[in-house]
Image 1 (cartoon, rainbow, N blue to C red):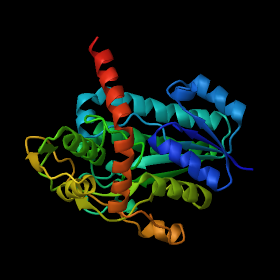
Image 2: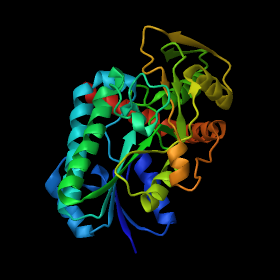
Image 3: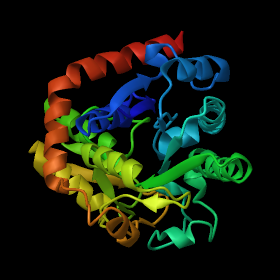
Length: 322
């Protein structure tokens, strides 16, 4: 039986990726700080990989947030992600793992590119609002390319759009736009507030993929894709932040109004990936979950877990202030 270790396997994406591999009959172990392994430290990670002896290492670990979080903690975001990727690939090589799977955000594409086509990945700079998060993942591809040149180490690199779904981040600062919108709007409804602020103009276009679809695509690509050149996984469709907010309003049954704070950044104007290579490579596979349906499921999950999420955020803020 093929054995997989999911690095970052206790997180939002990693948990779902681990389940997707299990459904396909893989033997799966998860590795994260929650299980006692800090991916920034090479020796403990290497010892773990030698002990578990997996065939595949799927790198889902990340220090991640939205535009606000990247602006607030740029050094930590950059250093942690650079160190995690560097350490993970070195450990995989020294543990003789057959295949390294690198999950990459679509913010690594040029910031002014209208359609994110794989051949254009190197055709310009990233948008400055995501540089500290995107550059470490791009650097990891170069590291993997060098390892392939020198030792033949196999790796694949899968580029994903923004993800959402049950278990996502819902912290106002830490989350991406959709998680933040869900929290703001549901909390406003619960508190009887009739106004919600949204960063930017609302005109930026973003693509969203339900986390379970992303996990299925990652597992499938791991089985059938073996080229080091990047492969997009996504829907190939996007919507404006304004339209997204309206979908959340509808799903939450909230009747208030939005105030767009145009003093805050929009980020890149348009982020849509080209899925033609994906369709040809993965036998026509595409994400199954409709955006409205996925938003409804995510809102339901947040409502059920809202009290615990709010309490955890309050405890974290209190501890940070001490």
